[in-house]
Length: 110
Image (cartoon, rainbow, N blue to C red; front, side):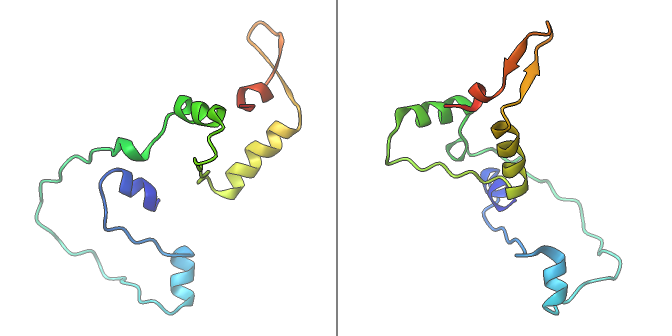
């Protein structure tokens, strides 16, 4: 979440490590009264910082280049990573619309 806010120009971002449950366990204060009323403001449309984002094609090219100076960080939650990784290592076959068997693994085998 922190990274996404930064990509769209929000540089002052804080994220609770452990979320609200950790905040409560640590004895953090909670506000339970009705929200305050604020006057409307004009909010600028955030602009995406393209220098922080890479396309699938760009990542594929980087991997194929075998450039050892480049680091690629997979920032998915471990549950999402493990789900996809487990699926790809099962050597499953998918059926295309014309019912031919198609291997899924080569799509991700860079």
